[in-house]
Amino acid sequence: MLQSQLFTKTKKDAPKDEVSNNAQLLIRGGFINKEMAGVYSYLPLGLKVLNKIINIIRQEMNEIGGQEVLLGSLQDPTIWQKTDRWDDKKVGIWFKSKLNAGGEVGLANTHEEPMVVMLKQHINSYKDLPVYTYQFQNKFRNELRAKSGIMRTREFIMKDMYSFSKNQEDLDTFYEQVAVAYTKIFERCGIGAKTYKTFASGGIFSKFSHEFQTVSAAGEDTIYISKEKNIAINDEVYNDQVLNDLRLKKEDLEKVKAIEIGNIFKLGNRFSSALGLQYTDDKGERNDVIMGCYGIGPGRLMGTIVELLSQENKINWPKEVSPFDVHIIGLSLDNEEVTKLAQEKYKELTDKGIDVLFDDRLNISAGQKFADADLIGIPERIIIGKESL
RNA sequence: CGGGGUAUGGCGCAGUUGGCUAGCGCGCCACGUUUGGGACGUGGAGGCCGCUGGUUCGAGUCCAGCUACCCCGACCA
Image 1 (cartoon, rainbow, N blue to C red):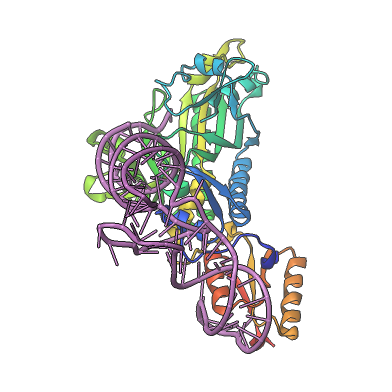
Image 2 (cartoon, chains in turn yellow, blue):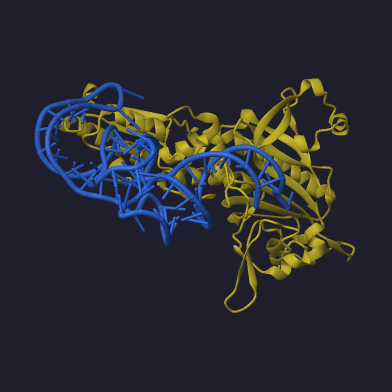
């Protein structure tokens, strides 16, 4: 792409109402725009990064047998009433609205209910299991307070996967596969070294759930990490009993702030039972489908990458999530020979299928072009100027 | 929702005890000189001073109400 055609501009100063490092840099670089508290738009550069992240996640989900779907944002109250999650006293983050035709709808804050209801149309026998569905879908959560730039917003994209298994053993096996896939995703996004699989509060069906927590001062959570074992414990379940269970010693753990970028959770039959998702086993008996759910917020992941890998005035995108593969910076483009050389290079790389951003802007000083390039953060850079001749 | 703070061209800011034409930097437009680390000169454009009401001869400035945004907390399947 020609940079002269890119409608977004870089800024020297961030708006003063953004304090978080991720939003300041992303706004200055022209990746995102703030619409209101907790709502951000993704602009061309930001959308490219977001889609790179989404594609990494998609690849890893497909790798373990996931099938991508896309459910609706508008939710039918009746199915949520069946699981007792429609009442504002039970789930306090609903955005709800009225239908002109009469009745209410909600904006989805998660998708267990509609996913289960949909699958009732397709799962009847043990031969139909397991099924692993996932989607990238907007979630709406009426948080009392949005904060930390794109880290905690009221509207955000989530990758949510749901597993449907015959029994607990199959769920346990798949659960571990997801954990491995998550580890790969975070490594590919360049934050693997600082991301810990973290023991967090479970539910009635498992002692723990697991969160993937990335160590960062910008995080909201407090965790205790064990570098030797490469695991961590969330503050919410940090006690002697848990330490004992995990064979960890207090003195070996380090207390840190962290960003929750993913979580995995065993749901058992909590939803299948309430909504009637059963299958017939090989003995002809009806059983509840055993479920798990697995979330990652690609937007928050993008923010986390910025928090971890950027410096003042400079974002450093890992190769796999960079908005472009190569940034060609043309200097002294009033010189015909230089321009010709830069254009040839641009064409050569583009013809090879390399995604190039070519800074072809005229009358812009070298310093400004370099500063812009630093902010945009493409890891590979080719500089073409008079010296290149 | 409790506490604290902010609101003045696109962005960052100044504006004194109320005073007449609201300034500065960046950015933007035109022309010229520049182009290996946010260049320079000259000339321009751009403002319901968050909103509503009040006090006053006169309000960006004082008063009241409201709204938005930020931070801390509570909250966060």
